[in-house]
Image 1: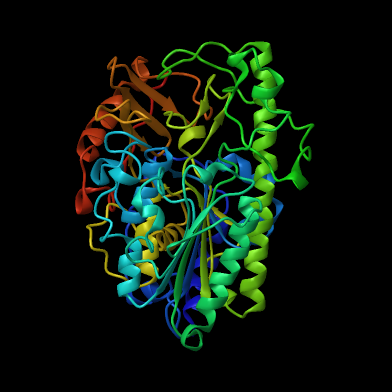
Image 2: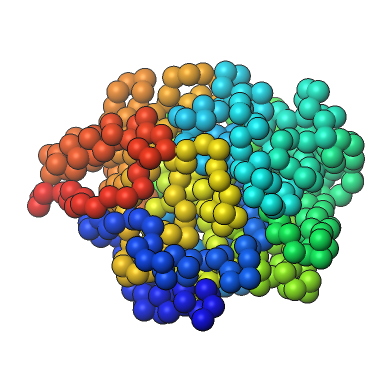
Amino acid sequence: MSSEARLGGILRRGRMAIATVAVASTVGVLCGPTSTAEAAALPGRLDSGRPNVLMINVDDLAATDIRYMPNVQRLLVQQGTTFTDAVAPTPLCVPARASLLTGKYAHNHRNWSISGTNGGYKGFTGRRNTLPVWMDKAGYRTMFLGKYLNNYGRGSERYSSGEPGWDDWQATIDPSTYNLMSPKFNSNGTIQTPGIYSSVVLKNRSIKMIKRAGTNLGGKKPWFLWVNYVAPHAGGPVEASDPKRRYPDQPSLWLENTRPMPADKGRFSGLELPKTPDMFYAGPGQVTAGKPYTAAQKRVMRYVYQQRIEAAQSVDRAVAGTIAHLKSSGQYRRTVIIFSGDNGYTTGHHDRQGKLWESSQSMRIPLVMVGPGVPRNIKVGSAVGNPDIATTVAALGRATPGRTQDGVDITRVLASSVKAGKTLYRPIPVAAWPTLGGTTTKYRGIRYGRYTYITVTASGVPVLYDRAVDPYETRNLAKEPRYAKVVAQLKVIEAKYRSCSGSTCPKTYAGTLATPSPS
């Protein structure tokens, strides 16, 4: 019996229980397989060898955005497993990508900001001990494409042959990374300017890289490709309809904006902002409640939202093109695809724009896995974070990480969740540092089951959201007497994992999550 068939048996027994998992107070044991048979049934453990791994990361794509991506829905969501509580523990480009390279939380890899102290490309240390190095040593052909860490390409690295561990290096160089109409690339040491829209050139190059890898040694050597799309991240060049051009004398309306592909411009002109309770809401307990948006700012934010969804369409088509090539080349059945965002993004939620906030709209990321043995069209609510993605890729390749892993193998989360037939909760420590550098946190806390509990560093104000009763996080319940036991438990858990590393980070545990006292 094949490994896919073995996993299929486990999944069929749990499919109905896990297809739509409600939030509950029971904490399950989130651990690895307990038997050799179950271990053999994990996704990617192919009888004939190790899988190829295609990791697709989309910059600033919120978990809620993929509803407008029909190819992602058809080819990934419906063909694989969606993790509905996937988060970026430090929701900012550089910390998230450093976690994807190391399997470590930001408090351990210490790459906290996009520039300045502990920030950006220059702030990332230990480049010779990262996921591509581990995969390369395990016998994989390793390939990188698209956006790397912020500020890459501004120094001598602009002309280097690539970062350690990568056999094929095709990275955009800053500041051109955000020129969506014509980015520049360091192509294994040669500067190239394709002169076409970012998502299109990334799709074309990803297909070429997969073709080369597929013919390498007769296709017997597995490959690992990490593709990093820039859209719908803010970018240019500025066009006539953008806020800076339309309102040149009103800086308050110059909201951060992206640039869709010309073919997609105007496709979502009638799209309104989500009508959710957190939209333009700045109630008590917010970390940095902004000024209420004016009517004009709200109109501009709707335009920003429209542009973001339009820009995501180019990525949606690119994903379809890449998967079509995998199928036509016969590599699809031997490839595990991991599709995710680096962090979430707010467009007026809680009167804010951007990321790095403590809310779910900022922290939650889309995360879908497709491949051999992965169940189709199901949703798993067990908590995972982007450090887990690096740990998972290494496990799929049977590579030996050079760092103790804070993350867990998501395939084991999947198998354990299905076997248990319910959501298995696990604490995820969260923290944020200043965007442009600094060593003092903005906030720190824990996401655990139905709760988000954080403390604002500057004021010491505690914030508790109960997402079971307030999914849009509009009420701070930290001071409510009926949540006293909940807060007490979460304080202990947060303190336990605040500085965790490797084996001391949340991996296996069981217990009962506190619930509010009757009102």
